[in-house]
Structures are given as C-alpha cells and as structure tokens.
Image (cartoon, rainbow, N blue to C red; front, side, top):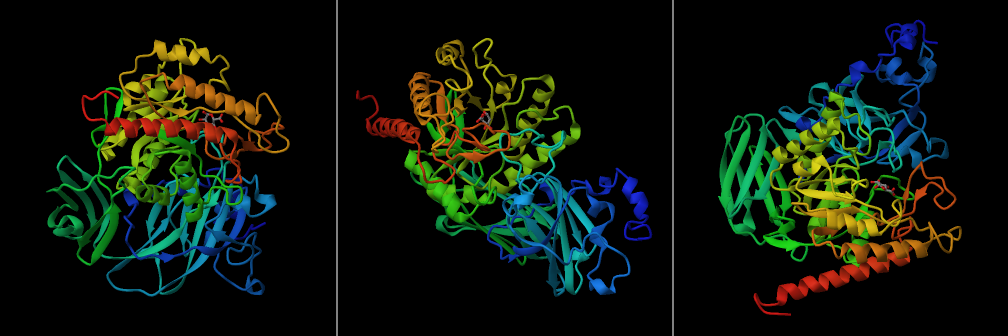
Length: 604
Ligand code: GCU
C-alpha cells in the first residue's frame, strides 16, 4: 500500500476517491484539434510499446504516469506497475487478440514508449493516433496533455511545449469500458475490442501550417476551403492536370476560393483522381481528389446528374486474427470480394472504418456509406453524449470529406423513434450538412411493423431513408414486406441498409431450417424477388459480407459469431447465397448498361 507515496498526493485518499478520473475526461482532443496529414512526411510510432491492463484504474488513482524510469533496486517506494518494464504489445493491435487472458478484458490499459527529441526552433510536433477504442488519455513526461472520446476516429495532440531534448516518455491510457453515456452505449451486435488499433505517428510542422483542407466540385468550379494555423496572408492551391495554380488570400486563418474548372467526373466506372497541392509558407500538403456530384431528386439518387442504383453489401471492421485492426491486404480483399459480388457500393457499418478504406474506394471506384456508432439505445437525453456523438461525426467528416467515394454520411442505426432521439439525431443531421453540404445524409431506420409502413420521424431530416428489414429472418411473414411497399409513399430515396439471414457453413451447421445455408439462400431469393418490385428502393447493402465476432451470440450455430456473412470469417469460404446476390447484381448492372446505350426516345 502506497500510504506514504507522494505519487498520488495521499495514496490512501486515492483509494477512496471515486472522482479520480474527472480531471482526465476533458474531451479536449477533438475535431478542432485534428490536423490535415495527407501528403505529409510522418515519423511512425508503431511497434512494441510497454503494456499493462488496469482493471481498477489504479494507474489514474496512483498516478502511474508520474513514475520516472529507475532501476528496481534503486526505487525507495513499492510500486504496483512500472510503465518502463514488463509486457510489451505491438501497436497497432487489439489487446483481445494478443493473449487469451485479455480476450474479454474491458477497462483501462496503459501503453508507454520512449520518444527521442531534438529541439528545432520554430518547429511544432503533433502526435496523431489513427484510433484508440474507446477513450484515450495522453501523458507526456508525466504531464496530462488531453483526452479523446470515440473509438473509431483519429485525434491529434500537440506535444511541442512538453517535449524536452533527448528522451521523453509518452503514455496513453486507453479505456474500452461500455457505459451508459458512450457512443455506442453498452449493448452492440459487434465485439467490443480495445486498444490503440490503428497507426500512430508524429508530425513535424512549421510554425504556420495547414490544419484543414476541403476541396469539392461546386457546379462548374472547384471550391477550396482551408484552415491555416499560424500567421499567413495567402496560400497557393494547385491542380497541375487542370492547369490550376491560384494564390488564395488567407483572412483570419481561413482561405476560401471558387476556381472555374471542368474536371473529368469521378464515378465507379471512371474513378478519376487529381493530384492536389496546397502550400502555405513552409508547409505543403498533397492529396488525390475525385470530383463528382451526389444528390437526390424525388426518390432517385443522382450521381453526376444521372440516377443510380446502389448495388451494395455491408461490412464490419472485423478479422478472425486481427480483430478490429485492418491491413492494406485485408481492405483490398474486402473490395475485391465486393467487386466479385457486382457491387458499386458498400455500407461501412456501424462506425468510421480505417481512412485507407475510403482512399482505396476512391481508386477502385466504389461508393461508400460511412457511419457514426449512434447505434440502438443511446443516452439520447444526455448533452455530454450528444457532444461525443457530434464530435465523432465531425471528426469523420473532416477526415474523409475529400474522398469522392464517400456519398452518404449516416448518423445512426436502428434507434427507437422517441422525442429525445429525434432531437439528438436532428442535431447530428444539421452538423453533417454544416460540415459538408455536398453529400447525402441517412440513417438505418426501422419499419413500423404495427402499421406496416416506412414511418420514422427522422426521415424528413435525412436525404436517404435507410431501412433495416429482416423479412425471412426476424420477421417471418414475407408478404408484409410487399405490403410495406404498397402502404408507403416515401418522398425521398430508400435503400435497404440491412437484410439477410445466418448461415452456419461449418460441419456443425444444420442441413435445413434456421441457420442452415439452404435457408440463408432461400431468404436471399425471396428478398430479391420482393425488393425488385419496389421502385422507390434505390439500393441495398445486405447484411453482411463476412461472418463477424460478437459476444452476445452463443447459440450452437453461432458460437460467438454472427453468421450472416455471405463469406465465412476465414474471408475465403463463400456461401451459396453469395452467388444468388451476385446473379441479381449482374442482372441489374446489365439493365443499367442497356439503359445507357439505348438512344433517347428509342424502344428497347
Ligand atoms: C441489426 C443491426 C446489426 C446486427 C444485425 C443482426 O439490424 O443493425 O448490427 O448485426 O441486425 O441481427 O445480425
């Protein structure tokens, strides 16, 4: 017992103080402290970090972050954890996938690594973490620098003032507890991973740098909006392939310009990207941006002024071996399977995926629905929860709004239609439009099964109505799906954001009935036969491409996995329903090609 330790002021008192974490839950690292990193050189901080699980938050209570490195035999006080010795783990990773004893661990964990620094006058150092699930507190040389909420969005923290010459010690305390006020709350149908599970890097910046850049098509011009941190009077924007090289005035840190241009438009068939550069003082950022328009007209979704049907599939970020950590190969395999299915679109459920996903989708020509985890029950009446959700949405949009592949921002999934939820989601819908008026908004809504109608008060506040319906699985009477179609007259596009059925492909799987491959196949056939008759359905993203891990499914055919995948968790074994959906998408794609080649006014 550290009775006499000055580490925690009064160690005994620290055991009785249940407000021990309040000083560290500042949410001070958020959308406003992000920096633009594309095209910048970075010093990777990935690799082995010291690691320790901390179920009771002893680290915050005893202030482990103030412990200095010392040989054990030289220490004069007993200690419960030494951040500079013991276990190490690779970053990025999910601790659940590293040791059996950590599989179901939920709580705080401490990551520590050394950071060598050589001071350079006039330079600024910023740490960026790609994602840490769920809450992350940052300490440098024992000083608390800030805290981030949100398990799937990047965050940045400036280290400049706290770095010292030579060796520094960086500590991140990551907590993945599921609580009532978090987003998502404590009950999800996906596994609650934890850890620093995306890349970490250090950026060395000039005193004045480009904090944010947003480039998009605005009718027959390119709209440029940039935020400059530091003193600047102008910035130079270039797109060489379009012969654009423009000096843009910077006023109060903002550079705004509308530059006439007629770029080749990005689409799944023609995923054209342009090299874009913005220079300001000594700083330079680069990106590869596609230009297109996405809008709704009546119940149509319009890409570059033409109606499209979204041939999609839903995906989680989940891997049998890596958990929520994603690799380039994993992403490329995902998109290759989607293309094999005949997709032009994916729903990245239920939270922001790795930023590499949208970058690759830009190159490969796939449209994306991106989403914040306002999932099922959320503490909709809690202002702090709204602040957290709103910030996660802003971080996602600032991270990906230069990605042509992203066409839809989704603000939630299957939330109960209550007054508190409506007020909460209306705020998110407004935030999405204020951060990015160029894209469509949506949410996966529920059907009103009592009245067999598409009826959700949120629908009038979003552009596209996502519909999760599981006729053939959770709802047995298939005829109702057709009735919903006849009873509903939505004034905006509807996409089936989820439908599907479990199919256990293993030898344990049943030969017929629920959880059999045959039944999953039959559900897909009946869903397609019904949905194809609903002309206001402008897309679908069945649930789901791959089987995925989840704690709450322990039936004899699930065994800790949701088996609605069209491909098993090995990401190789296709189930029969894969070919059923692929055949439908091939048919739809052929129809679209024919429609495009028939001259205006001619008959087929
Ligand atoms: C829900 C939910 C998914 C879930 C799926 C299922 O619609 O949105 O997250 O995994 O149904 O029950 O398999």
